[in-house]
Length: 215
Ligand code: G3P
Image (cartoon, rainbow, N blue to C red; front, side):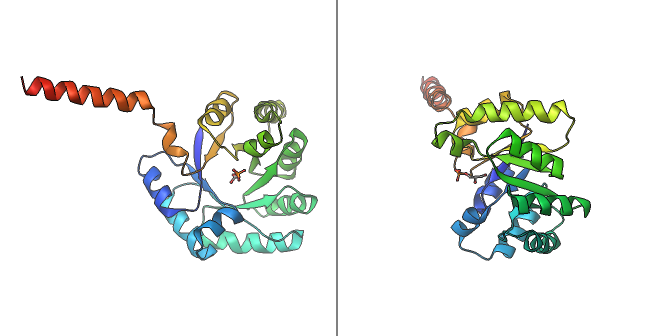
């Protein structure tokens, strides 16, 4: 399974990238706004840091505007993937962009049908949102399982990015369900390698070692 970072924070990306754990980065307008920096500068810096796809989202809602923005975004760096919202205009843009060889990540996927439509239109990636489905009382993991099954049934090459990941269980369960990628917030990522019993164990080993040295 590949791990993407769902953040535009350079410090977070640098820290986790140095562990060799970052296969790519995803952003969206909310994430970019949180950094309060110039969009183009931030995306270029991330692209230079990470050896993998970096999603940058369009803000137009019309096909023509999306395609125009996409063509500009991919000029910023060779690893930019254009994030497109899951709408009719978005599908049309994805279809056109795929014919131009521009990689896309269709975002805000909440049903299997939406995922299938995006894959058929030519999306490189689809981003089903787990946390936001949980927020409305839906069983988000079923969506990942079903998407995995239907994409495999028909041999689509589109990769599933499990997004809106909120906790460790989400990460473990989407891995079980066969997602291609999980995109994880920078603040959650360190929890993937941590456990209180690990910390406690280290403290005890150190204490015992010190006592042994002082014998
Ligand atoms: O990858 C999508 C993600 O950024 C949305 O997460 O927590 O705002 O639902 P969240």
